[in-house]
Amino acid sequence: MASAEQVVITGLGVVSPLGNSREAVWESFRAGRSGVRSLEGFEAKNLPIRFGGEVRDFDPKAYVRPRKSLKVMSRDIQLAFAAAQMASEDAGISPGAVDPERLGVIFGADMMYCDLEELEPAYRACYENGEFQESLWGERVMGELNPLWMLKYLPNMPACHIGIAHDARGPSNSITLGEASSLAALAESVRVLERGAADVMIVGGGSSRIHPMPLVVRTSRWLSQRNDDPAGACRPFELNRDGMVYGEGAGALILEPESRAVRRGARILARIGSYAEQFGVGSNRATAIRQSLAASLRNAGVLPAELGFVSANGLSTREHDAIEAQAIRAELNDKPTTALKSYFGNLGAAAGAVELISCILALDAGEVPRTLNYETPDPECPVNVVHAKEPTAAGSSAVVMNQTTSGQAMAVVIRSPNA
Image (cartoon, rainbow, N blue to C red; front, side, top):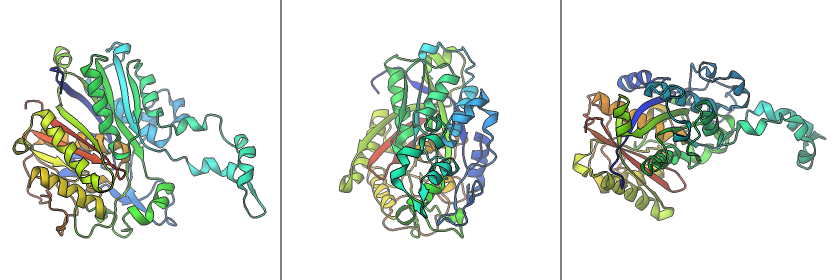
Protein backbone atom coordinates (compact mmCIF):
# COMPACT_ATOMS: atom_id res chain seq x y z
CA MET A 1 0.00 0.00 0.00
CA ALA A 2 1.17 3.50 -0.75
CA SER A 3 0.47 4.91 2.70
CA ALA A 4 2.79 4.25 5.63
CA GLU A 5 -0.21 4.44 7.95
CA GLN A 6 -1.37 0.93 8.81
CA VAL A 7 -5.13 0.36 8.68
CA VAL A 8 -6.41 -1.96 11.40
CA ILE A 9 -9.67 -3.64 12.37
CA THR A 10 -10.90 -2.77 15.85
CA GLY A 11 -14.44 -4.13 15.88
CA LEU A 12 -16.56 -6.78 14.24
CA GLY A 13 -20.16 -7.89 14.13
CA VAL A 14 -21.69 -10.93 12.51
CA VAL A 15 -25.16 -12.32 11.88
CA SER A 16 -25.01 -15.74 10.25
CA PRO A 17 -26.56 -19.20 9.90
CA LEU A 18 -24.00 -20.34 12.50
CA GLY A 19 -25.18 -17.82 15.07
CA ASN A 20 -25.22 -14.13 15.77
CA SER A 21 -21.97 -13.68 17.66
CA ARG A 22 -18.30 -14.43 17.14
CA GLU A 23 -18.47 -17.04 19.89
CA ALA A 24 -21.32 -18.90 18.19
CA VAL A 25 -19.57 -18.83 14.83
CA TRP A 26 -16.27 -20.12 16.19
CA GLU A 27 -17.96 -22.85 18.23
CA SER A 28 -19.64 -24.10 15.03
CA PHE A 29 -16.28 -24.17 13.28
CA ARG A 30 -14.69 -26.12 16.13
CA ALA A 31 -17.58 -28.58 16.19
CA GLY A 32 -17.72 -28.93 12.39
CA ARG A 33 -21.40 -27.99 12.55
CA SER A 34 -23.17 -26.77 9.41
CA GLY A 35 -25.66 -23.92 9.37
CA VAL A 36 -27.33 -25.22 6.21
CA ARG A 37 -30.75 -26.65 7.09
CA SER A 38 -34.28 -27.13 5.85
CA LEU A 39 -35.96 -23.73 5.60
CA GLU A 40 -38.31 -22.58 8.35
CA GLY A 41 -38.75 -18.85 7.67
CA PHE A 42 -41.42 -19.40 5.02
CA GLU A 43 -43.39 -22.26 3.50
CA ALA A 44 -41.00 -24.00 1.11
CA LYS A 45 -42.56 -27.42 0.56
CA ASN A 46 -43.60 -26.60 -3.01
CA LEU A 47 -40.28 -25.01 -4.00
CA PRO A 48 -37.65 -26.94 -5.97
CA ILE A 49 -35.03 -25.97 -3.36
CA ARG A 50 -36.13 -26.26 0.26
CA PHE A 51 -32.93 -25.66 2.22
CA GLY A 52 -30.25 -23.04 2.73
CA GLY A 53 -28.10 -21.14 5.19
CA GLU A 54 -30.89 -19.49 7.15
CA VAL A 55 -30.32 -17.08 10.05
CA ARG A 56 -32.20 -18.26 13.14
CA ASP A 57 -33.00 -16.59 16.47
CA PHE A 58 -32.66 -13.11 15.02
CA ASP A 59 -34.85 -10.32 16.39
CA PRO A 60 -34.25 -7.02 14.58
CA LYS A 61 -36.03 -5.15 17.39
CA ALA A 62 -33.00 -5.85 19.57
CA TYR A 63 -30.82 -3.72 17.30
CA VAL A 64 -32.91 -1.22 15.35
CA ARG A 65 -33.60 2.18 16.89
CA PRO A 66 -36.01 3.82 16.38
CA ARG A 67 -38.12 0.72 15.87
CA LYS A 68 -40.39 2.49 13.42
CA SER A 69 -37.49 2.26 10.96
CA LEU A 70 -38.27 -1.45 10.63
CA LYS A 71 -41.24 -0.51 8.44
CA VAL A 72 -38.81 0.47 5.69
CA MET A 73 -36.19 -2.24 6.26
CA SER A 74 -36.09 -5.43 4.23
CA ARG A 75 -34.46 -8.53 5.68
CA ASP A 76 -31.14 -7.59 4.05
CA ILE A 77 -31.15 -4.16 5.69
CA GLN A 78 -32.07 -5.55 9.10
CA LEU A 79 -29.19 -8.03 9.01
CA ALA A 80 -26.69 -5.39 7.89
CA PHE A 81 -27.87 -2.87 10.46
CA ALA A 82 -27.55 -5.39 13.29
CA ALA A 83 -24.02 -6.37 12.28
CA ALA A 84 -22.97 -2.70 12.15
CA GLN A 85 -24.39 -2.09 15.63
CA MET A 86 -22.47 -5.08 16.97
CA ALA A 87 -19.23 -3.94 15.33
CA SER A 88 -19.48 -0.41 16.72
CA GLU A 89 -20.09 -1.71 20.23
CA ASP A 90 -17.26 -4.22 19.84
CA ALA A 91 -14.88 -1.41 18.85
CA GLY A 92 -15.94 0.71 21.80
CA ILE A 93 -17.18 3.51 19.56
CA SER A 94 -19.95 5.21 21.49
CA PRO A 95 -22.26 7.86 20.03
CA GLY A 96 -20.37 11.11 19.56
CA ALA A 97 -16.94 9.52 20.04
CA VAL A 98 -16.00 10.26 16.42
CA ASP A 99 -16.40 13.58 14.63
CA PRO A 100 -19.48 12.93 12.44
CA GLU A 101 -17.76 14.52 9.45
CA ARG A 102 -14.89 12.02 9.87
CA LEU A 103 -17.02 8.88 10.25
CA GLY A 104 -17.90 7.03 7.05
CA VAL A 105 -19.94 4.02 5.93
CA ILE A 106 -19.33 1.79 2.92
CA PHE A 107 -21.48 -1.35 2.65
CA GLY A 108 -21.96 -4.09 0.11
CA ALA A 109 -25.49 -4.98 -0.94
CA ASP A 110 -27.30 -7.45 -3.20
CA MET A 111 -30.46 -7.33 -5.21
CA MET A 112 -33.18 -7.25 -2.57
CA TYR A 113 -36.27 -9.37 -3.10
CA CYS A 114 -39.58 -8.01 -1.84
CA ASP A 115 -41.98 -9.93 0.34
CA LEU A 116 -44.37 -11.60 -2.08
CA GLU A 117 -47.31 -10.81 0.19
CA GLU A 118 -46.69 -7.12 -0.43
CA LEU A 119 -47.22 -7.61 -4.16
CA GLU A 120 -50.32 -9.78 -3.84
CA PRO A 121 -52.87 -6.89 -3.81
CA ALA A 122 -51.23 -5.33 -6.87
CA TYR A 123 -51.21 -8.68 -8.65
CA ARG A 124 -54.87 -9.32 -7.89
CA ALA A 125 -55.80 -5.84 -9.12
CA CYS A 126 -54.44 -6.82 -12.54
CA TYR A 127 -56.02 -10.27 -12.63
CA GLU A 128 -58.97 -10.49 -15.02
CA ASN A 129 -60.59 -13.21 -17.12
CA GLY A 130 -58.64 -15.90 -15.35
CA GLU A 131 -55.16 -14.52 -16.00
CA PHE A 132 -52.75 -11.71 -15.15
CA GLN A 133 -53.17 -8.70 -17.44
CA GLU A 134 -49.78 -7.04 -17.83
CA SER A 135 -51.32 -4.05 -19.61
CA LEU A 136 -53.14 -3.07 -16.40
CA TRP A 137 -50.03 -2.97 -14.21
CA GLY A 138 -49.05 0.66 -14.75
CA GLU A 139 -52.60 1.86 -14.26
CA ARG A 140 -53.55 -0.05 -11.12
CA VAL A 141 -50.43 -1.00 -9.18
CA MET A 142 -49.58 2.31 -7.49
CA GLY A 143 -52.79 2.41 -5.51
CA GLU A 144 -52.06 -1.04 -4.09
CA LEU A 145 -48.53 -0.42 -2.80
CA ASN A 146 -47.29 1.43 0.26
CA PRO A 147 -45.83 4.77 -0.89
CA LEU A 148 -42.57 3.89 0.90
CA TRP A 149 -42.44 0.40 -0.59
CA MET A 150 -39.35 0.94 -2.74
CA LEU A 151 -37.29 2.29 0.17
CA LYS A 152 -37.25 -1.22 1.62
CA TYR A 153 -35.45 -2.66 -1.37
CA LEU A 154 -32.94 -0.12 -2.70
CA PRO A 155 -29.34 -1.42 -2.36
CA ASN A 156 -28.08 1.87 -0.92
CA MET A 157 -30.42 1.59 2.06
CA PRO A 158 -28.13 -0.47 4.35
CA ALA A 159 -25.46 2.23 4.24
CA CYS A 160 -28.13 4.94 4.59
CA HIS A 161 -29.73 3.45 7.70
CA ILE A 162 -26.36 2.71 9.29
CA GLY A 163 -25.13 6.21 8.52
CA ILE A 164 -28.22 7.84 10.01
CA ALA A 165 -28.08 5.71 13.16
CA HIS A 166 -24.41 6.57 13.75
CA ASP A 167 -24.64 10.17 12.55
CA ALA A 168 -21.93 9.31 10.01
CA ARG A 169 -21.56 12.27 7.67
CA GLY A 170 -18.23 11.28 6.14
CA PRO A 171 -17.58 9.28 2.94
CA SER A 172 -20.46 6.95 2.13
CA ASN A 173 -21.02 4.43 -0.64
CA SER A 174 -22.88 1.25 -1.53
CA ILE A 175 -21.14 -1.50 -3.51
CA THR A 176 -23.12 -4.00 -5.58
CA LEU A 177 -20.64 -6.55 -6.93
CA GLY A 178 -22.32 -9.79 -5.93
CA GLU A 179 -20.09 -12.00 -3.78
CA ALA A 180 -17.23 -9.49 -4.14
CA SER A 181 -19.26 -6.61 -2.68
CA SER A 182 -18.07 -6.47 0.91
CA LEU A 183 -14.39 -7.06 0.12
CA ALA A 184 -14.65 -4.26 -2.44
CA ALA A 185 -16.27 -2.10 0.25
CA LEU A 186 -13.35 -2.85 2.54
CA ALA A 187 -10.83 -1.97 -0.18
CA GLU A 188 -12.53 1.36 -0.87
CA SER A 189 -12.68 2.12 2.86
CA VAL A 190 -8.95 1.50 3.19
CA ARG A 191 -8.36 3.99 0.39
CA VAL A 192 -10.59 6.54 2.14
CA LEU A 193 -8.51 6.20 5.31
CA GLU A 194 -5.23 6.31 3.41
CA ARG A 195 -6.04 9.61 1.80
CA GLY A 196 -7.11 11.07 5.14
CA ALA A 197 -10.75 11.61 4.25
CA ALA A 198 -12.04 9.89 7.41
CA ASP A 199 -10.90 8.75 10.85
CA VAL A 200 -13.14 5.70 11.18
CA MET A 201 -15.03 3.60 8.62
CA ILE A 202 -17.94 1.23 9.21
CA VAL A 203 -17.55 -1.45 6.55
CA GLY A 204 -19.30 -4.66 5.56
CA GLY A 205 -22.11 -6.27 3.66
CA GLY A 206 -25.52 -7.80 4.17
CA SER A 207 -27.70 -10.04 2.04
CA SER A 208 -30.55 -12.53 2.12
CA ARG A 209 -30.82 -15.03 -0.69
CA ILE A 210 -33.21 -17.09 1.40
CA HIS A 211 -36.26 -16.07 -0.60
CA PRO A 212 -38.56 -17.95 -3.00
CA MET A 213 -37.51 -15.89 -6.03
CA PRO A 214 -33.77 -16.74 -6.21
CA LEU A 215 -34.46 -20.30 -5.07
CA VAL A 216 -36.70 -20.75 -8.13
CA VAL A 217 -34.88 -18.65 -10.72
CA ARG A 218 -31.40 -20.11 -10.16
CA THR A 219 -32.46 -23.70 -9.55
CA SER A 220 -31.38 -25.65 -12.60
CA ARG A 221 -28.01 -24.13 -13.41
CA TRP A 222 -26.47 -23.03 -10.12
CA LEU A 223 -27.98 -24.59 -7.01
CA SER A 224 -27.45 -27.92 -5.29
CA GLN A 225 -30.46 -30.21 -5.44
CA ARG A 226 -29.77 -32.09 -2.18
CA ASN A 227 -33.08 -31.42 -0.44
CA ASP A 228 -32.68 -34.69 1.46
CA ASP A 229 -29.23 -33.76 2.81
CA PRO A 230 -29.03 -30.00 3.48
CA ALA A 231 -25.95 -30.11 5.71
CA GLY A 232 -24.07 -32.13 3.10
CA ALA A 233 -25.10 -30.02 0.12
CA CYS A 234 -22.29 -27.45 -0.04
CA ARG A 235 -19.17 -29.39 -1.07
CA PRO A 236 -16.45 -27.00 -2.30
CA PHE A 237 -13.73 -28.65 -4.42
CA GLU A 238 -15.21 -32.12 -3.74
CA LEU A 239 -15.76 -34.59 -6.57
CA ASN A 240 -19.51 -35.01 -6.01
CA ARG A 241 -20.48 -31.35 -5.66
CA ASP A 242 -23.64 -30.44 -7.56
CA GLY A 243 -24.04 -26.70 -7.05
CA MET A 244 -23.95 -23.86 -4.60
CA VAL A 245 -26.19 -23.33 -1.59
CA TYR A 246 -27.80 -19.97 -0.91
CA GLY A 247 -27.66 -18.35 2.50
CA GLU A 248 -28.19 -15.08 4.32
CA GLY A 249 -26.24 -13.01 6.79
CA ALA A 250 -24.22 -9.88 7.42
CA GLY A 251 -20.77 -8.92 8.57
CA ALA A 252 -19.44 -5.54 9.67
CA LEU A 253 -15.99 -4.25 10.57
CA ILE A 254 -14.64 -1.07 12.11
CA LEU A 255 -11.55 0.22 10.30
CA GLU A 256 -9.26 2.98 11.49
CA PRO A 257 -5.59 4.02 11.26
CA GLU A 258 -3.38 2.18 13.72
CA SER A 259 -2.13 5.41 15.29
CA ARG A 260 -5.68 6.42 16.18
CA ALA A 261 -6.53 2.98 17.53
CA VAL A 262 -3.43 2.98 19.75
CA ARG A 263 -4.10 6.51 20.92
CA ARG A 264 -7.60 5.64 22.14
CA GLY A 265 -6.51 2.33 23.63
CA ALA A 266 -8.55 0.19 21.24
CA ARG A 267 -8.07 -3.55 20.92
CA ILE A 268 -6.64 -4.36 17.50
CA LEU A 269 -8.20 -7.51 16.06
CA ALA A 270 -6.28 -7.68 12.77
CA ARG A 271 -4.25 -5.64 10.32
CA ILE A 272 -5.15 -5.09 6.69
CA GLY A 273 -2.15 -6.26 4.67
CA SER A 274 -3.40 -5.33 1.23
CA TYR A 275 -6.06 -6.01 -1.37
CA ALA A 276 -6.33 -6.52 -5.12
CA GLU A 277 -9.12 -6.65 -7.65
CA GLN A 278 -9.24 -8.03 -11.19
CA PHE A 279 -11.89 -8.84 -13.76
CA GLY A 280 -12.00 -11.55 -16.39
CA VAL A 281 -14.66 -13.41 -18.34
CA GLY A 282 -14.54 -16.67 -20.23
CA SER A 283 -11.01 -18.03 -20.46
CA ASN A 284 -9.72 -14.95 -18.61
CA ARG A 285 -11.50 -15.81 -15.36
CA ALA A 286 -8.64 -17.99 -14.14
CA THR A 287 -6.14 -15.26 -14.99
CA ALA A 288 -8.14 -12.68 -13.05
CA ILE A 289 -8.31 -14.91 -9.97
CA ARG A 290 -4.61 -15.65 -10.09
CA GLN A 291 -3.66 -12.01 -10.66
CA SER A 292 -5.80 -10.75 -7.78
CA LEU A 293 -4.28 -13.36 -5.48
CA ALA A 294 -0.70 -12.60 -6.55
CA ALA A 295 -1.15 -8.83 -6.37
CA SER A 296 -2.70 -8.91 -2.90
CA LEU A 297 0.28 -10.85 -1.54
CA ARG A 298 2.81 -8.72 -3.39
CA ASN A 299 1.24 -5.47 -2.19
CA ALA A 300 1.18 -6.79 1.37
CA GLY A 301 4.82 -7.85 1.22
CA VAL A 302 3.88 -11.44 2.06
CA LEU A 303 5.77 -14.23 0.32
CA PRO A 304 3.75 -17.35 -0.55
CA ALA A 305 5.85 -19.35 1.90
CA GLU A 306 4.99 -16.88 4.68
CA LEU A 307 1.22 -17.01 4.18
CA GLY A 308 -0.68 -18.97 6.81
CA PHE A 309 -3.71 -20.14 4.84
CA VAL A 310 -6.19 -19.37 2.08
CA SER A 311 -9.90 -18.73 2.55
CA ALA A 312 -11.18 -19.66 -0.90
CA ASN A 313 -14.39 -18.55 -2.55
CA GLY A 314 -15.41 -22.22 -2.87
CA LEU A 315 -18.83 -21.82 -4.50
CA SER A 316 -19.33 -25.59 -4.80
CA THR A 317 -20.15 -25.40 -8.53
CA ARG A 318 -18.52 -27.74 -11.02
CA GLU A 319 -16.90 -25.12 -13.22
CA HIS A 320 -15.97 -22.33 -10.85
CA ASP A 321 -14.36 -24.50 -8.19
CA ALA A 322 -12.05 -26.05 -10.77
CA ILE A 323 -11.02 -22.64 -12.12
CA GLU A 324 -10.34 -21.23 -8.66
CA ALA A 325 -8.50 -24.31 -7.40
CA GLN A 326 -6.16 -24.32 -10.38
CA ALA A 327 -5.42 -20.62 -9.85
CA ILE A 328 -4.61 -21.20 -6.17
CA ARG A 329 -2.40 -24.16 -7.03
CA ALA A 330 -0.51 -22.22 -9.67
CA GLU A 331 0.21 -19.35 -7.30
CA LEU A 332 0.54 -21.04 -3.90
CA ASN A 333 1.18 -24.72 -4.62
CA ASP A 334 -0.19 -26.76 -1.68
CA LYS A 335 -0.94 -23.93 0.76
CA PRO A 336 -3.64 -25.00 3.27
CA THR A 337 -7.01 -23.87 1.91
CA THR A 338 -10.42 -23.75 3.53
CA ALA A 339 -13.83 -23.03 2.02
CA LEU A 340 -16.13 -21.51 4.62
CA LYS A 341 -19.23 -21.55 2.43
CA SER A 342 -19.41 -25.23 3.34
CA TYR A 343 -20.73 -24.03 6.72
CA PHE A 344 -23.27 -21.39 5.74
CA GLY A 345 -23.65 -21.33 1.96
CA ASN A 346 -23.25 -18.39 -0.39
CA LEU A 347 -24.09 -15.21 1.53
CA GLY A 348 -23.90 -13.00 -1.55
CA ALA A 349 -22.83 -9.45 -0.72
CA ALA A 350 -22.17 -10.51 2.88
CA ALA A 351 -19.86 -13.37 1.90
CA GLY A 352 -16.57 -11.50 1.97
CA ALA A 353 -17.23 -9.74 5.27
CA VAL A 354 -18.43 -12.87 7.09
CA GLU A 355 -15.58 -14.97 5.70
CA LEU A 356 -13.00 -12.31 6.59
CA ILE A 357 -14.39 -12.13 10.12
CA SER A 358 -14.13 -15.92 10.27
CA CYS A 359 -10.46 -15.67 9.29
CA ILE A 360 -9.83 -13.09 12.03
CA LEU A 361 -11.25 -15.61 14.50
CA ALA A 362 -9.04 -18.33 13.00
CA LEU A 363 -5.87 -16.23 13.32
CA ASP A 364 -6.80 -15.44 16.91
CA ALA A 365 -7.41 -19.10 17.76
CA GLY A 366 -4.37 -20.27 15.81
CA GLU A 367 -6.18 -22.88 13.72
CA VAL A 368 -7.89 -23.08 10.34
CA PRO A 369 -11.58 -24.10 10.25
CA ARG A 370 -11.85 -27.33 8.32
CA THR A 371 -13.91 -27.53 5.14
CA LEU A 372 -17.08 -29.57 5.59
CA ASN A 373 -18.23 -32.36 3.27
CA TYR A 374 -14.85 -32.87 1.61
CA GLU A 375 -14.85 -36.64 1.15
CA THR A 376 -13.55 -37.45 -2.34
CA PRO A 377 -10.91 -35.19 -3.92
CA ASP A 378 -11.58 -33.94 -7.44
CA PRO A 379 -8.55 -34.22 -9.75
CA GLU A 380 -9.77 -31.04 -11.45
CA CYS A 381 -9.39 -29.17 -8.14
CA PRO A 382 -5.71 -29.62 -7.21
CA VAL A 383 -5.82 -27.64 -3.99
CA ASN A 384 -4.83 -28.64 -0.45
CA VAL A 385 -8.24 -28.56 1.23
CA VAL A 386 -8.16 -28.44 5.03
CA HIS A 387 -10.71 -31.07 6.03
CA ALA A 388 -9.26 -33.29 8.77
CA LYS A 389 -10.50 -33.00 12.34
CA GLU A 390 -6.94 -32.54 13.57
CA PRO A 391 -6.20 -28.79 13.80
CA THR A 392 -4.22 -27.09 11.05
CA ALA A 393 -2.09 -24.17 12.23
CA ALA A 394 -3.32 -20.82 10.92
CA GLY A 395 -0.02 -18.96 11.04
CA SER A 396 -0.08 -15.18 11.28
CA SER A 397 -1.66 -14.20 7.95
CA ALA A 398 -4.44 -15.23 5.60
CA VAL A 399 -5.79 -14.25 2.21
CA VAL A 400 -9.56 -14.06 1.74
CA MET A 401 -10.78 -14.64 -1.82
CA ASN A 402 -14.15 -13.89 -3.36
CA GLN A 403 -15.27 -14.02 -6.98
CA THR A 404 -18.50 -13.57 -8.85
CA THR A 405 -19.83 -15.81 -11.59
CA SER A 406 -19.63 -12.78 -13.90
CA GLY A 407 -15.86 -12.43 -13.51
CA GLN A 408 -15.05 -10.09 -10.61
CA ALA A 409 -12.16 -11.34 -8.46
CA MET A 410 -11.17 -9.88 -5.07
CA ALA A 411 -8.45 -10.86 -2.62
CA VAL A 412 -7.64 -9.30 0.75
CA VAL A 413 -4.65 -10.15 2.95
CA ILE A 414 -5.02 -9.80 6.71
CA ARG A 415 -2.48 -10.28 9.48
CA SER A 416 -2.82 -11.08 13.14
CA PRO A 417 -2.36 -8.06 15.46
CA ASN A 418 1.23 -8.88 16.41
CA ALA A 419 2.45 -9.91 12.96
